[in-house]
Length: 149
Image 1 (cartoon, rainbow, N blue to C red):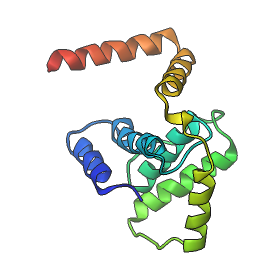
Image 2 (cartoon, helix red, strand yellow):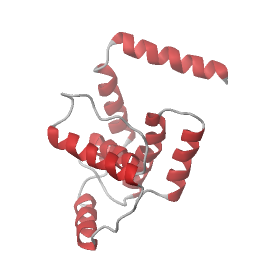
Image 3 (cartoon, one colour):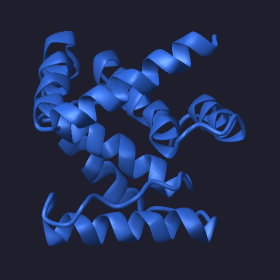
Image 4 (cartoon, rainbow, N blue to C red):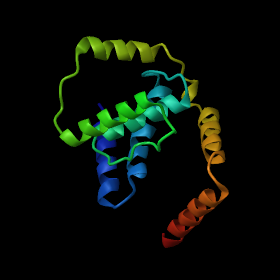
């Protein structure tokens, strides 16, 4: 369950008309903080981001599913499940045994996935996979946003 503060920040972003990915960023940030605080770990930065995005979808953020061919069918099914949970609005109690098992499994993982170096490597790798035109367009959009302020 995400922190109350994270939910409020995401709702505020939604009210301000910010994109779903910006709203989801709050959940990813929370997940990174949890790893840094030692609440649990993650095998990789990618896993930490995936957990954050999953929480965002379950909280009702209208995040699109990953593009076809980018993820496995199992991941696609999980995303669909998260989206359904987010739309239903009802909160079902999670089995204590299952919750404890997940917590223990994550606690055994490392904490380097949330280091500045790991996050930087992840961001650079993700950017490198995008086309030059796509990166340029994003940079122009960011510059325009800064200009407005």
